[in-house]
Image (cartoon, rainbow, N blue to C red; front, side):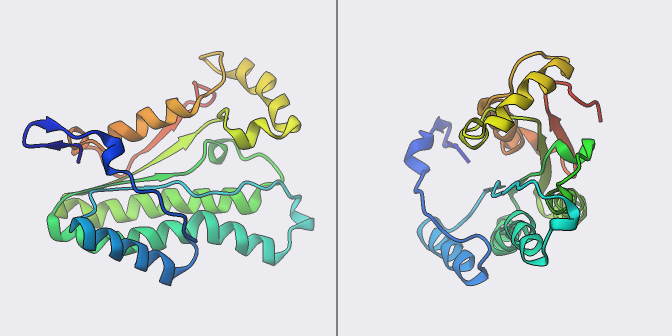
Length: 208
């Protein structure tokens, strides 16, 4: 939590970036162990790892299916499973899992991606039921089409903005800050009565 003894702690003082493979159980558990050794607790987990290849189903290999599921869904299990005992022990925790608004649309060529993102929503709902009595909330966010470096690097993706923005209730491109603000709220102590929910942040492209 960012509040301690009534004083706000600068968030940058709490950030210690580490590059790890979130699909590898040993690596994930070792990283969490280091955090617990240094700080004795983990209050917030945001599962945001993801890849989003477009592949027609008949061309989709099992190897690519497994790669996408491992990155997008297995990582959610591994990271959450590693931090959950500490959260439960301290009777406090905020877990936010990033899914995708594409799950509500169902575009073709993304069966592996949407399967992984739908799995995140199911995971969120079930764990929320288990975790609630222990002071831990679990929610999901489904971002719409967001102006990220990965999207901007692909001309085909950039062209989609013209179509999607025209269909949104709020006619502008989604920004990373739009997602970050929602994450910040759901991970705050004040959001303690919200759990098991899927919050769609897509500028009103779909009402769900």
